[in-house]
Length: 328
Image (cartoon, rainbow, N blue to C red; front, side, top):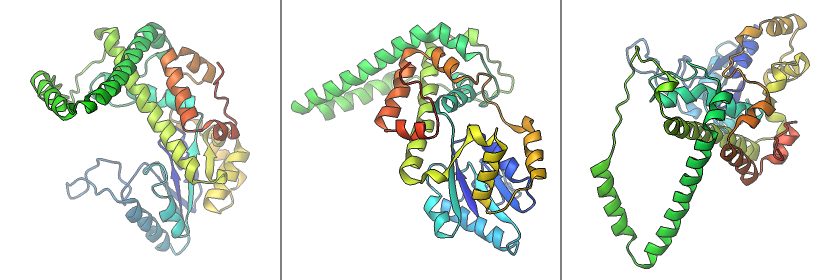
């Protein structure tokens, strides 16, 4: 029994499909239920499928394995994040792993999947439309940097104001007044799923597109760095699976397969896995790390570096062989 943790955008679909090529392996992908429905699916009783706790899910994996009389190894990938399943599965004798991908490529992939969705008010599903983000950043960089700087100045001013107000015992009164003002001037946006909704980037102002770019980039960084940090703090190096290598190197994939499943992998199955390259889900057309990083606004580069330095991720990423471009 095994569990592979990931926030997605790291070849997890490819990995699950590849593991399932072996006749003795069953690997589910992106589920928190048994049977393995997708999140939000409706069950045969017409009710939403029950989302299981990590403890319930891992117990279910063990029972599935037991009912095959030891003839199948059960596992799952990309449903629970961070180390939610680590202690639970290890206490039951299972194995825990986590997928890593170069942070620039991962951030770019998440950004590419979610930017249009956020800009459309969730009327368009994630990853449904792909844009040329290098051209977009070239157009919006100055706006993005200006909004970021303005946003940070507002944060700093709020902190200073709170300190001053505390001395005059006015903080609670100020909060009450602000709340009342917000109530009077609140702007509500109703989000609807309109199948006929057409997204045209030219219909939005540069300021709006820049703001959504900032929100999407922050979302991408949080998903990437906070999860990686949690994994690094709680796992050993041999529990890391490097995405760039397992999708490209037969030797590395075979090492990972044996480590994950405890089973051998024939060259025949290995060839079948690597001949089927079309099942790798690509969230972004741009794959060159230097090209992606060069296209980012200055503020994005600062945020990227700040996460790495603040969370002390530099040495571990470099141990994985990642050129972080911190001196660029």
